[in-house]
Length: 385
Image (cartoon, rainbow, N blue to C red):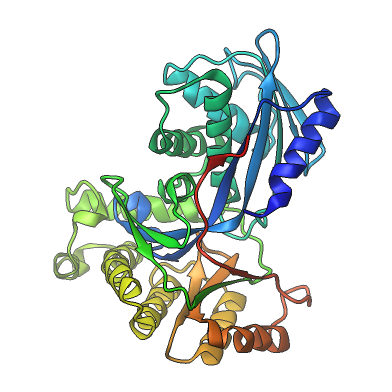
């Protein structure tokens, strides 16, 4: 865990409310190694948590009001625990906070007055799930403050997902919240997004995870993300299936002439990505970086050509890194698309060469050097205090 998020939340709480918080909850962001846009299609994903996240400091307050301050934004909000969404400001962070409280209340959990301070260090607009880490940290903080003992980590993840779907307006799947809540240090998390079963996949100790921000900021809720979800749903209805997870590639190909081209290509990405993700979990568990790299390359090509969610700077960055890494490892765009980051898996011996290549040959659209993050798989959400 990067230490500044928890310490910043604690310091902001003390400065703003005048006393120490009763609890500090922390939840990490994530990077998805492979399995993009499969989660809301009941498919498979392979993310891991990263060493950046969001911390929520919380303490008691008399009455019904929940007072919240976002330390990194110098912004404040106050709302009733009985009606969290009433008169909600048109600010995304407040929708996340109020939405989480509303989902818990609608699920039968009792909330009352509280003070909260929030701080995070997940790069914004990078596709590293700053929003999911916020939702999960909020859920864990509210659980601790109000003694919501029946609220398990999977339930917190589901509540955070519902808050994004219903109150923020992003039709995200469960992957981001579930890995933030349930990740294990040193392991990726293979997730079946239908059953919510998880399987930790050990990452060899001599393997590095490199994340590079393209410098193209993405706005998920305002992007074409929801359009892609609708296109997937169109094909699901065509087959009278529960989800695209239930449609086989041969079945899809046989119906190609009866499905509009755009919808067909969207579905082909999802169907083939599910197969790649399962194969990648197996390859990673064996330490087979050559096979992992081949699958990651196929995944990126599919996102570029069939799902059409990459952008030119991202494609250029992927090609540059793959050239530096060679056949023992891989790189692909990660996240919802339309900008954000790429993720590479590579031997530690190749790390310095890969970083040097990016610094030498890539600049963001505004001409600056990109944000480069070397990380290991981190643990999931936890109480600091």
